[in-house]
Image 1 (cartoon, rainbow, N blue to C red):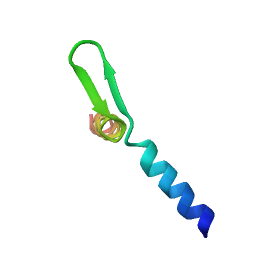
Image 2 (image 1 turned 120 degrees about the horizontal axis):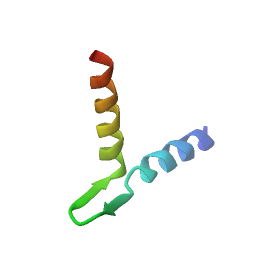
Image 3 (image 1 turned 45 degrees about the horizontal axis):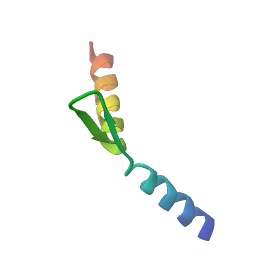
Image 4 (image 1 turned 90 degrees about the vertical axis):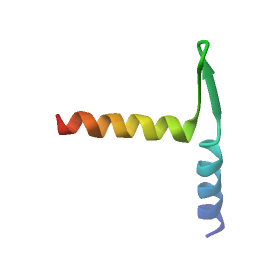
Length: 46
C-alpha cells in the first residue's frame, strides 16, 4: 500500500515540471500532456 502511494505521489509531482523553449513558449508538463491528448482526439474525429 505504501509503495502505491509513493508511486502516485511521484507521478503527480513529476507533472509539475516547467518547460521553456524558444522565446515565448512555456508550459507545465501537465498542460503539455493535456494539449497533446486534446490534439490527438481532435485528429481522430477528422
